[in-house]
Image 1: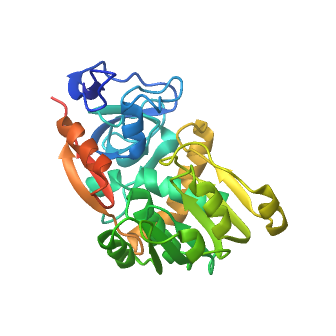
Image 2: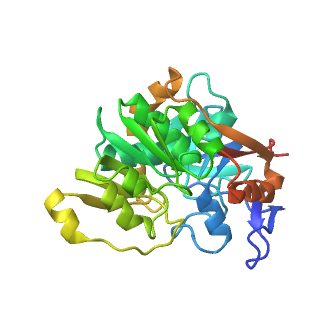
Length: 322
């Protein structure tokens, strides 16, 4: 098959479409012909050498895709079934082996491109807001990076769950985009300090920055507030004032989806499909695809995502294997 490979470890944009061996199915896996693959910041980090896949998982980039089952292996699934796939790697390719518990249906009314851009964000946002933070109707939820793929989805999910949603972004245009998605409070982080604007009022914060946002996030938390850190765009280290947190009974969670055991991922996928897919299918949450590129132009897709100029998701499209 053909897949994107990093041909120069010193150059994160040396992404070339080359011939590689087909995946070999293990017990409990299906073989999927990839039709589209979502692009995520984790892919940029891996191309830079900073986010290797878990042991035993494919070295190929790509944490989500959509496609058609071409070999069901020992799973009992059907050849020709259209699916979404949550992956630990391997999506930037013509074929990928997927644990059966990490397959989703294609939401009714969604294209394969839209599905490829929804699986990883849906499972990430649902697992962190609902399963980890226990978000509930009436909560004030702060979403950092509201115009990105995760943020675009999280704003919509928060509103669908009956929350008041605050968000941060870096320009008036991106904040207007967030408002169109339903955000109630929009903060330009270049001009405003979100910690001062929201001091002591946020029940849940979903953070993709880390670093020096840690202390300010805690300042913005309400009593019994929950901070969930899911990415480290601002660096891995910050300062916590435990003396401030303890009387307010606040908590900090640091999570990642990719490194979880397959049994945990299967539970998250099933719970996400049960609770979020109806919101996709009734239009409460809409897909937010910024741009698509053919697989061979993965480097251009990475350039766009890295530039910070896009909103929503970037998706690669894959031709049928020869």
